[in-house]
Length: 237
Image 1 (cartoon, rainbow, N blue to C red):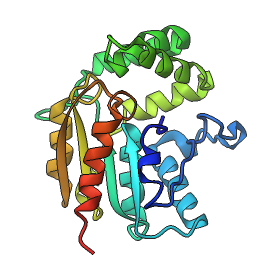
Image 2: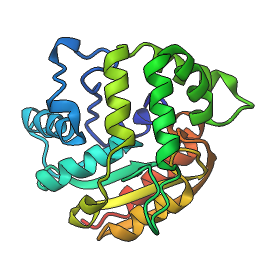
Image 3: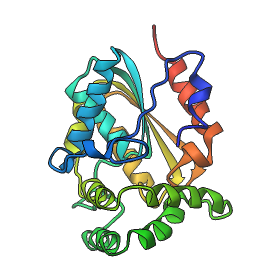
Image 4: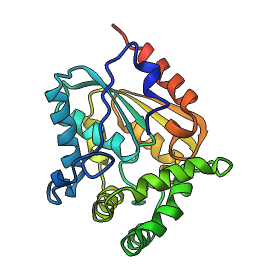
């Protein structure tokens, strides 16, 4: 998912890529339903990785829910990350009073029920929708395939943890300098969500990308890299 992004930073940074437990090439036997019943379990993994690799003052780059996982990790262990790059973050997907998350309760329940009943059908329907860019169907196919490769039970649990999460209270506690990258048309994390994240982070910059869809790391890597470099290059010594 990051193959178009990380090479642009390889000369200046030590690059660490990892699969969350239950995804990609991770050890499925390490999955613990209790630990990963909230995003904090995944944040604890991030902290453990960084401590194992002696990372301090690093840059965390996270997409979608992983952006929130990184923010939680930075609150729990603020010495690990000086900077957060949050691509399409959402602290809550369900609308609440004057908060616009992009979905109603009923829509999220329907989404999760569909996944429970038919992971393959859900993946084929949601992959292209999440990716956007219908003129480039190969991108939607790649995302669909990545969903289909995930263990069905883990995928269902992870989706439930993701779409029912509410981490709005964590945002004001983030001390790291943060960049919020928001796509101009995103059905998963609409523009109001990105603006909310920006306004509730104590020290953040906000960039509205021309890119559409929810995955600019795949659909618009040049624009994404340029925004990241402008942010990181503006860091004071």
